[in-house]
Image (tube, rainbow, N blue to C red; front, side, top):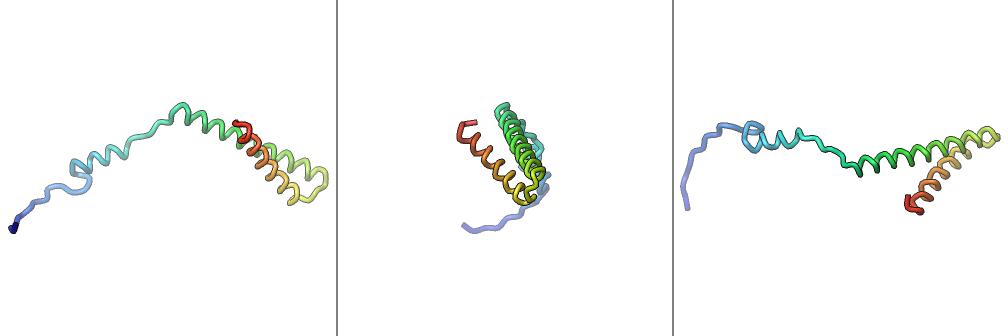
Length: 91
């Protein structure tokens, strides 16, 4: 087949039907499910507990006269131990 043709472009980009559908789809918001909300709340709680525990160990270590770096490392390791402990018991 051979031939020639002429086309006239009347709309481009966002002004086409597909462009307007894409614009509508990009403006929608996603609502979190109840499970996602509860999981996010649980993660914030566990993270907060770990940070508080690490901070308490740091303060106790400095108050006892231990070097700050040593107590900082102990606080961080206790945070990870607490996190792993909860994971092992299915929390």
